[in-house]
Length: 223
Image (cartoon, rainbow, N blue to C red; front, side, top):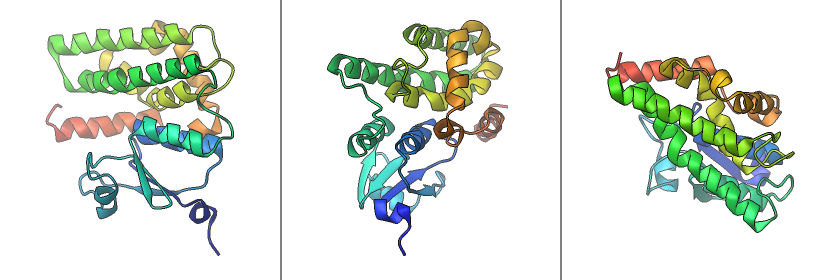
């Protein structure tokens, strides 16, 4: 008897703490799609990962009926198109373009700045701290007084940003600032997201993320 995941033919190659992989998990959960999760060892990548993503050799990779889809935002858009219930992207072309812009902004800014925040010291670290606060304030400006980035409905930008809420504690601890104090509306939005089952089951405890970053710092000799 085939499982629901086998019937759907969906496999996700991922790594537990990856905010990019978590986007895919959240999107699949929002759509109610059953899938097989395969945890990757990024120090010893599986033959399947190398076969399915020979260009970048990175997670996440969504495999649907044997065909690979790579890059998290591309995967989330694919999921939204294939499973049309609970749409994540707005129907209006302008609103859809705007959502893609902000998701792309997160891709280009948040992860890179966060990495500088825990990796660098001195003036470079202080610059990363200022940059992170500015990035979060820009996101808060776009959120405004809305419940979610898309308005009343949890959508594409929320899926793109939500996994990084598990990294806020790391950013705050490394940067010695408070998201609650600097960006109270964004902090309240993060709490609302975590009340959703799709998010709470896909992202990890912020302290576990901080422990993971601590191990990375030791690995790179940054302690």
